[in-house]
Every structure is written in structure tokens, then in C-alpha cells.
Length: 261
Image (cartoon, rainbow, N blue to C red; front, side, top):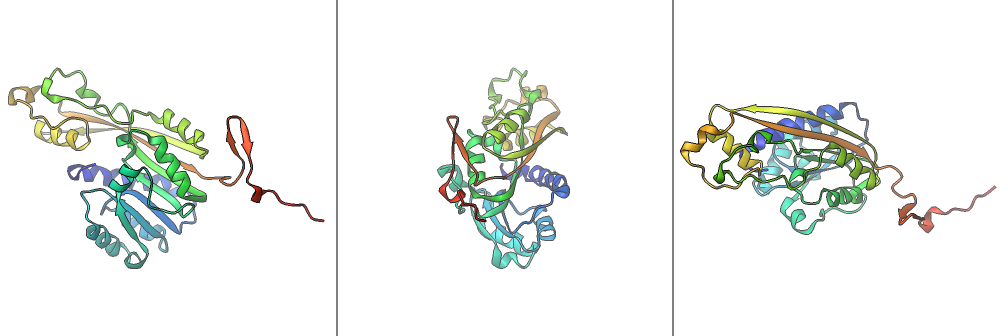
């Protein structure tokens, strides 16, 4: 997600937090991926005043800007937060976070840009503690549907890296052993006064290559853009119970106890 569309990331983060209003969770450590200096930091500071925040910031956000935003949100962030690069995760496929170390993973508009969201879910499972929660949002496959019928050679539309709809994601959560997944979806319509603004946003959303479009073809561009926004959350329950592989259950020896009288 590039800088011109950060306002959308901020809006969706706010909607995600509203959906979490009814969720009761004892939060000591939060992983925010990707993170940015948005309004959500104030909400985290008020809702979880003693929580430590770990950020994976994208390349457009400097470490100092992230530190400053957290410090302004809450003084404890001066001492209890940590920021690393989202690029490191995208390269390695692994969070720079220990196993079983966070209570909440909060991911805003990232999954649509990942070729393998299942690998992301596996990493979230690894770092979440027993009883932890993953909460996420991403752009679904109907995003930008107005652009597909257009016959403009220079437009060069891209498909989302992950075309999963909410049902695909729900199935993936269950297959990765998450419990009680809750999925939701809404359509947002963005209206535009001119085509230049539309092109800037679809580029920021990674829906097109940056090839210039002829002025004569700008008139056929739509004046609106549909976003399919998918929301979800799921719990980590029974993390240390038996693991199933190839229809065989494996139990850690530490889980076997002797009954005493």
C-alpha cells in the first residue's frame, strides 16, 4: 500500500477496531502488520494502555516517524514498542517475532498483495499465544470491477496477488487450526472528480502498471471505483493440543500426565 492511499488504510483500520469493540481480550503484546502513523495508534493506547506494540512498517514509513507516532499516542510507547521493516517479512516469509509472544495480530489491507496468504496465517499462528486473536482486512476479488471491461491497451490491469473471497479465507483459517472464524464483507464506492485521481488510486492499490495513458482515452475511464473489503478475525485455542497430519494425531509428551489419587 503506497502513500497516496494511506487515508483508506486509516479508514479501514478504524472500522476494524469498531468490529473488535465487543471482543474481550487480555492484551499485553500486539503485532501490527503493516503499521503506519495512523489514528489506530490512539485507539490502541486507550483500549490496551499497558500493551507493547510491535510494528512491521512498510518502506514509505521511516522508523523515526513510526516511533514518533507511537510516542505521541502514549508515553509508554517510548519504552515498550519496537519497529521493524515489512520488507524483511516479504523477503523471508517470517516475522522477526518469537514464538508465542503476542496476544493480537492486527493486519490492515495487506493480504491482497501476498501471493500466499496461507503462509501469512501460519506465521500468525506461530507468534500468537494460546487464546490470542488474529484480526485482518484485505481487498477482495471484486475490487476495481469497473475497470475490467475497458479496452485501453495502456491501462494494463493487474489481478490481485491473492484473489481469495471471504469464503476462501474462512476455509483457510480453519485449515490452519484457527478457531471460530468470523468473516464479513462490504462494498465501498469511491467517486472521482477527474480521471487523474482515479489512476493515482488504482496505481496505489497495485491494480495497474504505471504505463501512461493517452489523454484521448482518459475520457472513457469510469468516475467511480468499487472496493470489496473483507474483514475477519479468529482465535488461537488449543494450540498445544494434539496436532493432526495425514489423518494421524500427534501428541507432545509434555501433554501426557499421570493421574494421581
